[in-house]
Length: 286
Image (cartoon, rainbow, N blue to C red; front, side, top):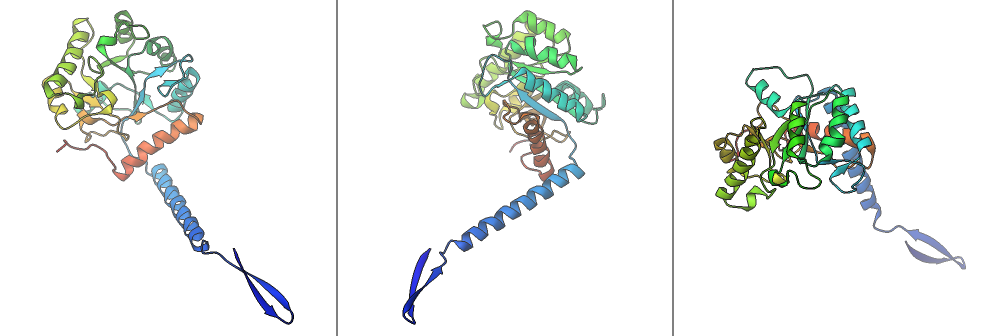
Protein backbone atom coordinates (compact mmCIF):
# COMPACT_ATOMS: atom_id res chain seq x y z
CA UNK A 1 0.00 0.00 0.00
CA UNK A 2 1.14 3.59 -0.69
CA UNK A 3 1.22 6.28 2.03
CA UNK A 4 -0.01 9.91 1.78
CA UNK A 5 1.52 12.53 4.06
CA UNK A 6 -0.83 15.45 4.88
CA UNK A 7 0.51 18.50 6.75
CA UNK A 8 -1.71 20.19 9.30
CA UNK A 9 -1.49 21.86 12.70
CA UNK A 10 2.17 21.40 12.91
CA UNK A 11 2.22 17.62 12.38
CA UNK A 12 1.89 15.12 9.56
CA UNK A 13 -1.02 12.73 9.30
CA UNK A 14 -0.47 9.44 7.59
CA UNK A 15 -3.35 7.98 5.60
CA UNK A 16 -3.25 4.48 4.13
CA UNK A 17 -4.17 4.30 0.46
CA UNK A 18 -5.56 0.94 -0.58
CA UNK A 19 -3.97 -0.74 -3.58
CA UNK A 20 -5.83 -1.63 -6.79
CA UNK A 21 -5.98 -5.36 -6.13
CA UNK A 22 -9.05 -5.38 -3.89
CA UNK A 23 -11.53 -5.80 -6.74
CA UNK A 24 -9.54 -8.70 -8.18
CA UNK A 25 -9.55 -10.52 -4.85
CA UNK A 26 -13.31 -10.04 -4.54
CA UNK A 27 -13.81 -11.32 -8.09
CA UNK A 28 -11.78 -14.45 -7.34
CA UNK A 29 -13.85 -15.07 -4.23
CA UNK A 30 -17.05 -14.64 -6.24
CA UNK A 31 -15.88 -17.06 -8.94
CA UNK A 32 -14.83 -19.58 -6.32
CA UNK A 33 -18.22 -19.27 -4.65
CA UNK A 34 -20.00 -19.83 -7.98
CA UNK A 35 -17.86 -22.87 -8.75
CA UNK A 36 -18.63 -24.37 -5.34
CA UNK A 37 -22.33 -23.65 -5.78
CA UNK A 38 -22.43 -25.23 -9.25
CA UNK A 39 -20.37 -28.19 -8.07
CA UNK A 40 -22.70 -28.70 -5.13
CA UNK A 41 -25.76 -28.47 -7.37
CA UNK A 42 -24.28 -31.01 -9.78
CA UNK A 43 -23.39 -33.36 -6.92
CA UNK A 44 -26.95 -33.11 -5.64
CA UNK A 45 -28.37 -33.84 -9.09
CA UNK A 46 -26.16 -36.90 -9.51
CA UNK A 47 -27.17 -38.13 -6.05
CA UNK A 48 -30.90 -37.43 -6.45
CA UNK A 49 -31.21 -38.47 -10.09
CA UNK A 50 -28.31 -40.87 -10.77
CA UNK A 51 -27.94 -41.61 -14.49
CA UNK A 52 -28.50 -45.21 -15.53
CA UNK A 53 -25.92 -47.19 -17.45
CA UNK A 54 -23.11 -49.70 -17.35
CA UNK A 55 -19.85 -48.63 -15.73
CA UNK A 56 -16.61 -50.01 -17.21
CA UNK A 57 -13.42 -49.71 -15.16
CA UNK A 58 -9.92 -49.85 -16.67
CA UNK A 59 -7.01 -51.44 -14.81
CA UNK A 60 -3.62 -52.71 -15.90
CA UNK A 61 -1.56 -54.24 -13.07
CA UNK A 62 -2.49 -55.27 -9.52
CA UNK A 63 0.47 -56.10 -7.30
CA UNK A 64 2.69 -54.89 -4.46
CA UNK A 65 5.97 -55.09 -6.37
CA UNK A 66 5.91 -52.42 -9.07
CA UNK A 67 5.31 -48.72 -8.39
CA UNK A 68 4.13 -46.86 -11.48
CA UNK A 69 1.09 -45.13 -12.93
CA UNK A 70 -0.36 -48.47 -14.09
CA UNK A 71 -0.11 -50.45 -10.85
CA UNK A 72 -2.83 -50.57 -8.19
CA UNK A 73 -1.79 -52.27 -4.95
CA UNK A 74 -3.60 -55.43 -3.85
CA UNK A 75 -4.98 -53.64 -0.78
CA UNK A 76 -6.33 -50.74 -2.86
CA UNK A 77 -7.82 -53.09 -5.44
CA UNK A 78 -9.52 -55.18 -2.76
CA UNK A 79 -10.90 -52.02 -1.12
CA UNK A 80 -12.22 -50.79 -4.48
CA UNK A 81 -13.97 -54.09 -5.19
CA UNK A 82 -15.47 -53.98 -1.70
CA UNK A 83 -16.69 -50.44 -2.40
CA UNK A 84 -18.39 -51.61 -5.59
CA UNK A 85 -20.17 -54.37 -3.69
CA UNK A 86 -21.17 -51.96 -0.89
CA UNK A 87 -22.56 -49.51 -3.46
CA UNK A 88 -24.72 -52.19 -5.06
CA UNK A 89 -22.75 -52.94 -8.23
CA UNK A 90 -22.83 -56.35 -9.92
CA UNK A 91 -19.89 -57.36 -12.10
CA UNK A 92 -20.78 -58.56 -15.61
CA UNK A 93 -18.96 -59.08 -18.91
CA UNK A 94 -19.16 -56.94 -22.03
CA UNK A 95 -20.87 -59.88 -23.75
CA UNK A 96 -23.53 -59.86 -21.01
CA UNK A 97 -24.23 -56.23 -21.88
CA UNK A 98 -24.45 -56.98 -25.60
CA UNK A 99 -26.86 -59.87 -24.96
CA UNK A 100 -29.03 -57.62 -22.81
CA UNK A 101 -29.05 -55.03 -25.59
CA UNK A 102 -30.57 -57.66 -27.87
CA UNK A 103 -33.11 -58.63 -25.22
CA UNK A 104 -31.55 -62.05 -24.53
CA UNK A 105 -30.98 -61.38 -20.83
CA UNK A 106 -31.53 -58.69 -18.20
CA UNK A 107 -28.94 -56.40 -16.73
CA UNK A 108 -28.57 -55.98 -12.96
CA UNK A 109 -29.61 -52.64 -11.52
CA UNK A 110 -26.02 -51.34 -11.33
CA UNK A 111 -23.78 -53.25 -13.76
CA UNK A 112 -20.02 -52.85 -13.83
CA UNK A 113 -17.34 -54.42 -16.04
CA UNK A 114 -13.88 -54.73 -14.44
CA UNK A 115 -11.32 -54.74 -17.27
CA UNK A 116 -7.56 -55.19 -17.48
CA UNK A 117 -5.40 -54.10 -20.42
CA UNK A 118 -2.20 -55.74 -21.72
CA UNK A 119 -2.42 -59.09 -19.93
CA UNK A 120 0.03 -58.94 -17.04
CA UNK A 121 0.57 -62.14 -15.04
CA UNK A 122 -0.65 -60.50 -11.82
CA UNK A 123 -4.14 -60.38 -13.33
CA UNK A 124 -4.10 -64.14 -12.68
CA UNK A 125 -2.01 -64.41 -9.53
CA UNK A 126 -3.22 -61.30 -7.63
CA UNK A 127 -6.39 -59.80 -9.10
CA UNK A 128 -8.35 -62.96 -9.89
CA UNK A 129 -8.35 -64.34 -6.30
CA UNK A 130 -9.55 -60.95 -5.01
CA UNK A 131 -12.37 -60.94 -7.55
CA UNK A 132 -13.37 -64.56 -6.95
CA UNK A 133 -13.53 -64.02 -3.20
CA UNK A 134 -16.21 -61.40 -3.88
CA UNK A 135 -18.02 -63.36 -6.60
CA UNK A 136 -17.01 -60.90 -9.32
CA UNK A 137 -16.20 -61.30 -13.02
CA UNK A 138 -13.51 -59.60 -15.09
CA UNK A 139 -12.51 -58.96 -18.70
CA UNK A 140 -8.85 -59.15 -19.79
CA UNK A 141 -7.66 -57.62 -23.06
CA UNK A 142 -4.58 -59.40 -24.41
CA UNK A 143 -1.67 -58.21 -26.53
CA UNK A 144 -1.27 -61.58 -28.21
CA UNK A 145 2.41 -61.30 -29.16
CA UNK A 146 3.22 -60.71 -25.47
CA UNK A 147 1.50 -63.87 -24.25
CA UNK A 148 4.05 -66.08 -22.48
CA UNK A 149 6.71 -63.39 -22.16
CA UNK A 150 8.15 -62.70 -18.68
CA UNK A 151 5.60 -60.80 -16.61
CA UNK A 152 2.69 -61.62 -18.94
CA UNK A 153 -0.04 -64.24 -18.87
CA UNK A 154 0.62 -67.64 -20.40
CA UNK A 155 -1.71 -69.66 -22.60
CA UNK A 156 -2.34 -72.11 -19.75
CA UNK A 157 -3.25 -69.27 -17.41
CA UNK A 158 -5.61 -67.78 -19.98
CA UNK A 159 -7.38 -71.09 -20.44
CA UNK A 160 -7.76 -71.47 -16.68
CA UNK A 161 -9.03 -67.90 -16.32
CA UNK A 162 -11.62 -68.50 -19.01
CA UNK A 163 -12.82 -71.64 -17.21
CA UNK A 164 -13.19 -69.53 -14.07
CA UNK A 165 -15.47 -67.01 -15.76
CA UNK A 166 -13.04 -64.39 -17.08
CA UNK A 167 -13.95 -62.84 -20.43
CA UNK A 168 -11.02 -62.48 -22.82
CA UNK A 169 -10.67 -59.81 -25.48
CA UNK A 170 -8.12 -58.41 -27.90
CA UNK A 171 -5.72 -55.55 -27.32
CA UNK A 172 -4.27 -56.12 -30.83
CA UNK A 173 -1.23 -58.19 -31.74
CA UNK A 174 1.50 -55.66 -30.88
CA UNK A 175 -0.12 -52.83 -28.87
CA UNK A 176 0.55 -50.25 -31.56
CA UNK A 177 -1.98 -47.37 -31.78
CA UNK A 178 -4.29 -48.30 -34.65
CA UNK A 179 -4.69 -44.66 -35.68
CA UNK A 180 -0.97 -44.40 -36.43
CA UNK A 181 -0.91 -47.02 -39.19
CA UNK A 182 -2.62 -47.67 -42.51
CA UNK A 183 -6.08 -49.22 -42.52
CA UNK A 184 -4.67 -52.48 -43.83
CA UNK A 185 -2.07 -52.57 -41.07
CA UNK A 186 -4.81 -51.88 -38.54
CA UNK A 187 -6.91 -54.69 -39.98
CA UNK A 188 -3.92 -57.04 -39.74
CA UNK A 189 -3.41 -56.13 -36.06
CA UNK A 190 -7.01 -56.83 -34.99
CA UNK A 191 -7.43 -59.86 -37.24
CA UNK A 192 -4.28 -61.70 -36.16
CA UNK A 193 -4.91 -61.02 -32.49
CA UNK A 194 -8.40 -62.48 -32.63
CA UNK A 195 -7.47 -65.49 -34.76
CA UNK A 196 -4.43 -66.39 -32.65
CA UNK A 197 -6.47 -66.63 -29.45
CA UNK A 198 -9.24 -68.59 -31.12
CA UNK A 199 -6.77 -70.99 -32.78
CA UNK A 200 -5.27 -71.66 -29.34
CA UNK A 201 -8.62 -72.98 -28.18
CA UNK A 202 -10.00 -69.94 -26.39
CA UNK A 203 -13.61 -68.85 -26.83
CA UNK A 204 -14.57 -66.56 -29.69
CA UNK A 205 -13.14 -63.09 -29.19
CA UNK A 206 -15.89 -60.49 -29.45
CA UNK A 207 -14.41 -57.36 -27.83
CA UNK A 208 -11.33 -55.19 -28.44
CA UNK A 209 -9.60 -52.51 -26.38
CA UNK A 210 -8.05 -49.75 -28.49
CA UNK A 211 -4.33 -49.39 -27.67
CA UNK A 212 -3.79 -46.08 -25.81
CA UNK A 213 -7.52 -45.51 -26.22
CA UNK A 214 -6.97 -44.13 -29.73
CA UNK A 215 -9.60 -44.69 -32.42
CA UNK A 216 -11.09 -42.96 -35.45
CA UNK A 217 -14.20 -43.19 -37.61
CA UNK A 218 -12.73 -45.92 -39.83
CA UNK A 219 -11.94 -48.52 -37.17
CA UNK A 220 -15.52 -49.56 -36.25
CA UNK A 221 -16.07 -50.65 -39.84
CA UNK A 222 -12.92 -52.78 -39.79
CA UNK A 223 -13.91 -54.35 -36.47
CA UNK A 224 -17.36 -55.23 -37.79
CA UNK A 225 -15.85 -56.88 -40.84
CA UNK A 226 -13.51 -58.89 -38.61
CA UNK A 227 -16.53 -60.01 -36.54
CA UNK A 228 -15.89 -58.01 -33.40
CA UNK A 229 -19.07 -56.92 -31.65
CA UNK A 230 -17.72 -54.11 -29.49
CA UNK A 231 -14.67 -52.08 -28.48
CA UNK A 232 -13.76 -50.07 -25.38
CA UNK A 233 -12.15 -46.62 -25.31
CA UNK A 234 -10.59 -44.39 -22.66
CA UNK A 235 -13.55 -41.97 -22.71
CA UNK A 236 -15.26 -41.71 -19.31
CA UNK A 237 -18.98 -42.13 -18.75
CA UNK A 238 -21.73 -44.72 -18.37
CA UNK A 239 -22.86 -46.93 -21.25
CA UNK A 240 -26.46 -47.28 -22.33
CA UNK A 241 -28.02 -49.21 -25.19
CA UNK A 242 -27.69 -45.99 -27.22
CA UNK A 243 -23.90 -45.89 -26.79
CA UNK A 244 -21.97 -46.85 -29.93
CA UNK A 245 -20.82 -50.43 -29.11
CA UNK A 246 -17.51 -49.74 -30.87
CA UNK A 247 -16.88 -46.72 -28.62
CA UNK A 248 -17.86 -47.98 -25.20
CA UNK A 249 -17.02 -45.59 -22.38
CA UNK A 250 -14.48 -46.63 -19.77
CA UNK A 251 -13.13 -45.05 -16.58
CA UNK A 252 -9.41 -45.39 -15.93
CA UNK A 253 -8.33 -46.32 -12.39
CA UNK A 254 -4.70 -45.34 -11.64
CA UNK A 255 -3.05 -45.96 -8.26
CA UNK A 256 -5.05 -43.79 -5.84
CA UNK A 257 -3.57 -41.11 -3.59
CA UNK A 258 -6.70 -40.76 -1.45
CA UNK A 259 -7.93 -44.32 -1.16
CA UNK A 260 -11.52 -45.36 -1.81
CA UNK A 261 -12.69 -41.74 -1.70
CA UNK A 262 -10.72 -41.01 -4.87
CA UNK A 263 -12.06 -44.20 -6.49
CA UNK A 264 -15.66 -43.19 -5.77
CA UNK A 265 -14.95 -39.70 -7.10
CA UNK A 266 -13.87 -41.17 -10.44
CA UNK A 267 -17.13 -43.08 -10.64
CA UNK A 268 -19.03 -39.92 -9.69
CA UNK A 269 -17.23 -38.04 -12.48
CA UNK A 270 -18.36 -40.67 -15.01
CA UNK A 271 -21.93 -40.25 -13.77
CA UNK A 272 -21.70 -36.46 -13.95
CA UNK A 273 -20.46 -36.55 -17.54
CA UNK A 274 -23.32 -38.87 -18.45
CA UNK A 275 -25.84 -36.63 -16.71
CA UNK A 276 -24.49 -33.58 -18.58
CA UNK A 277 -24.34 -35.47 -21.87
CA UNK A 278 -20.66 -34.74 -22.37
CA UNK A 279 -18.74 -37.01 -24.78
CA UNK A 280 -21.12 -39.94 -24.46
CA UNK A 281 -20.34 -41.52 -27.86
CA UNK A 282 -23.95 -41.91 -28.95
CA UNK A 283 -24.39 -42.94 -32.57
CA UNK A 284 -21.78 -43.55 -35.22
CA UNK A 285 -18.86 -41.15 -35.77
CA UNK A 286 -19.13 -38.79 -38.73
